[in-house]
Length: 190
Length: 113
Image (cartoon, rainbow over all chains, first blue to last red; front, top):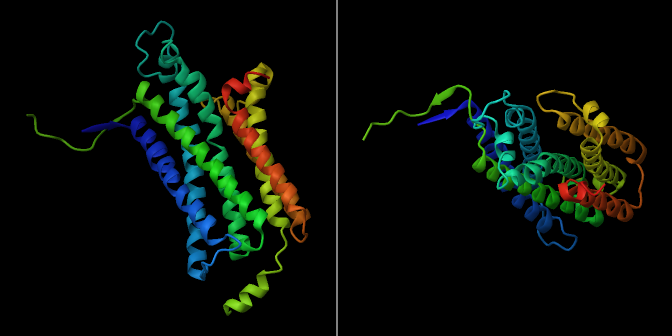
């Protein structure tokens, strides 16, 4: 059982940072919606607030790590140009997608949207984390602020979902592979 | 500090700092979409946006938007942090900018410009 370094970085970027971020979004939305609604009877304790602060900061870190590893580690491998005359484009995912009319859309629409829309997530969640750290339980008194923060977290969820969906599909049609091979486990030949 | 003391010490928090964070995030997101469209349509801007060659114009598009977002945030925060501002209008503008950035980054929409 082996994985290449490029494949491993793609996993860390997508399923590690991006996947965890997507999973965390629902928790943040529910907590901010339920506990900080103006008429909510739920009392946010100091422990609850500290937890949500840490939770949002962790989400912001995950979002930044996801876009930074995507843009500066995985994306250069994706968009690398093949040498002239090369017919096997397996190591050049962007060119492989563009070489077939049935897959070109995964690049021209999927990657073109994903590479930009994904950045809305770290911007939005960083803002939400900073606002929550400053206001905490006072968000109950600032109804417009709470609603707007919820809106930003929701859009960050949508943006991360778009990036995750296209990332998974693009990797399915033209995976980023190559580099050194890491052997995870050696099996017995059957 | 008891919960009552904590509540009274924070209840007078103005909304200015929150409004600054919201509007800056909206502006930063919107600029990201605008820079992406500009780099896609003009070769000169595309070349200008290549801050890191392996990543191409995406490096400049995102770095420029992030730098401006943080600068706008810092300026608005300094101006509004002790003030009570019209949060409803500011939140609406910020959310509208965020929604527009979501739409404008969609390639078929970006290609209309």
